[in-house]
Length: 381
Image 1 (tube, rainbow, N blue to C red):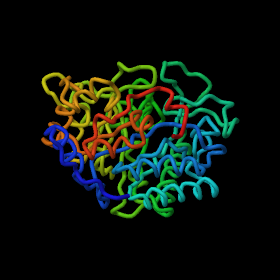
Image 2: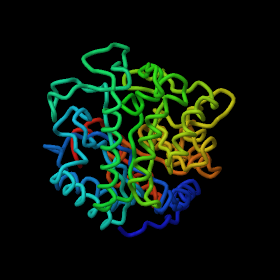
Image 3: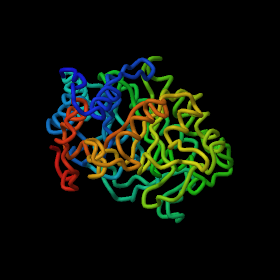
Image 4: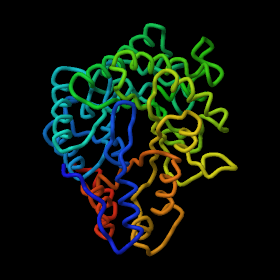
C-alpha cells in the first residue's frame, strides 16, 4: 500500500478530515498507520470454515485502499459449541489456519494491519446446527437472551476451562501465523457478554451476582489470552450495552457501574476496547456528551475504538462536502478525535459498499463516496 497523504484541497473541512484521520495511533506494541478501522462483519463466505482466495482479496483490497486496522469477521474458536454455521470461518484446524495465514500475509503485503475477532456464540446457538450438530448450547446459566431456558445448559467448571483454553489457543495461533493482535468478541449477547449481563447470568457461584463478580470468567479468559501471547501483542475487547434483537438493554446504567465491569478487564490485560454502539454520536449517560467509547477511555485509560453508523447515510456524506452539519457529521467526529474522546473510528457497512472508502476519505475525495446499498452484504466485492 502506498501511504495516502492528506490531499491539498480548497475545502478546509476536507483537509482537516484527511489530516486528523491520517494520524497514527499505538495499541500496545502495534502502530496503526491511521485512525480508520474496518469493523468486524459476519459474511458467511468460508465453506468448511476455511477462508479462501475471495476472502483474502476482500480484506487485502481494503488494506490497499488505506484502512489502518482490519478487524476480521467473527471467527469461531475451537470449542464444539462455539458456532452454528459451516460457512462462517473458524480459527482452529489446519486448513482454516492456513487460510487465515494467507489472509494476514496479503493484508500485510498491501500495507495494512489485521487482527482476527475470536468468537463463541454461547446460548445463541441452536442445537443441530453445523459445524458440530450434536453440541449443546452453553452459557453462564443456560438462559437465552429472551429469558427462556431453551435447549442449552449452564456451564460447568470443565466447560469454563475448555472455553478459556480455546480462546488462548486461538490467540496463540493468531500470533504464530502472523496476525498483529486479537479482538475478543464480548458484545451483542454472545457468550462473553452473557456472563457480563445480569439478564443471562443468574449464577449463584463466584461467577455471578454483582457486576464485578459477573466479570470474573471474562477476566480469567482475558488473563489467559494475555499470558498465551507476547507482552507486546495487542488484546482488544469488543463490548456493547445492546444485545441482538434488544437494543434497549444495558450492562451499566451509570459510569460507576460501567467502571466496575471494565476495570477488571483492563487489569486482566485488555490493551484497547472496541465500544459497539449503533450511532456513535449518541451520549451514553445523562449529563455528558461522551459516547460509550469516550466513557470507556475515560474510565480505563486504554485506547478506545468508536463505531456506529459512520458513513452510512446521505447526511453524513453531505456533511463531508459542506452541505449540512447534522449532529453525526464529520465535524463532530473530528472534534471528538481532536479532544481524545476516543482513538480510532470503525467503519462497517460503508466499507462493504465501497472498498475505496478509506482512500477517498484520506485524500479528501468525499464527493466520490458511494451511498450504502444493502445489496453489498451479499457479495465479497
